[in-house]
Image (tube, rainbow, N blue to C red; front, side):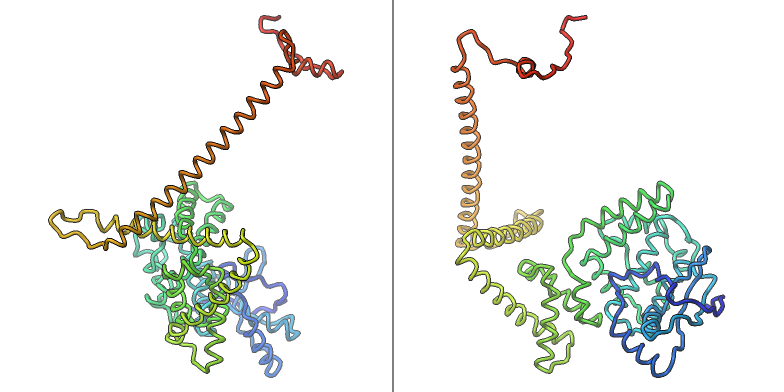
Length: 430
C-alpha cells in the first residue's frame, strides 16, 4: 500500500518512539546501534526512518528506532525523514513488523515483539468494536472472538495471522511459538491488562471496559513459567528460544529449576557450546541442556550443603521447600489419576499398583496426617495455656480487692488522674 506523506526535516531528538512497540519484549539492541553508527560515520546517513505526525504536531517513529539512535550517537541531530499522514495504530504495528522481518531478520525479540504489538492492537479492536470493517477482521465473528478472549485459551493465532498475513516470515507455526512465549512469560497477561487500563483512561464504553477487565482477569490466571525477556538476551533466534522453552517448562524440570534461573542457564549453555566449538542449534541445546543443568544444580547443592552444616534453620527451610514442591506434584498427579479413573468400566481389569507403592503412599499420607494432627494439638494446647494464664491473672486481680470492692471503671480512672471524663448520656436520662 502506497502511503501518503512527505519528506520532512526534523529534529531527531524530538522524535517519539512507536507507541505500539513493547520495549520490554523487544528492547533496543545496542549491538545494532554500534554497527549502524560505524556505517553512518563511514558512508553517511541515508535515512530509512518512517514516522507519523499526530494532530498536536508530535512526530512518532514507526520504523527506524535503531537508525535514529545511531545517528544521534554519530552526532547527527537533524535529518530528512518520511512522515506519513495516514498511519493509524494498526499501520504503525505493520510498519514495525515489516521492518523486523526485512531489516532485523526476525530475531527472537523482534519476532515476539511483532506478535505482541499485533495482539495488543487486535485486542482493542475486538473489545471495542472499532475498525471492524478492516479487511483482516471482517471475515471473523466479533462475538466469537470476544468469547475466545474471555476463555482460558485467550486470543487465537488465526486472527493474528490474518492481520500479519503478508509480513515475511509470519506463518502459523511461528505464531504458535511466539504466542506460547508470551503466555508462558506472563507478557500476554500484561498486554491485556495494559489494554484494560488504556480503555479505562480513554473512557471507552462501559461494555468494552467490562470485557477488558474480564479478559485481563482470565489472562492473569496463567502462571508464569518462562523468562522470555531474560532468555532472549542469550538465545537470539526464535528456534533456539522455542526449544529452550519446551525444555524448561516441562513439569519435571519446572519442579527443579526456578524461573529466575532460566536466563543464567541459557547463558551457560551458550558458553558451553562456544567452549566446545559447537553450533548453537536446537539439537545442541537439547543435547547439552541436562548436562549443564545438572552441573548448575550440583554447584547450588554443594553451596546449600555448606550452609546447611552451619545453619540448621536454613537446612529446615530447604527441606520444607522441597517437601512443598513434591506435594504440589503429588496433588497434580492425584488429579490426573482421578480423571483417568472417572468412568473406568466396572468389568475392566483394574490398573496394577505394586504393593510396595501402595504401602509407601499409605505410610507417607499417615505421616503427613500425623504432622497436621500434632500441629493442631500444639495450637490447641497453646490456646488453652494462654486462656489459663488469663484466668489466673484475673483471679489474682480479684483477690487483691476487698470483698465489696470493685475495680474503678475507665471514667473513674480518668477522673482520679485529673483528666476530663467523656460526656455520656444516662440510660434513662434527659
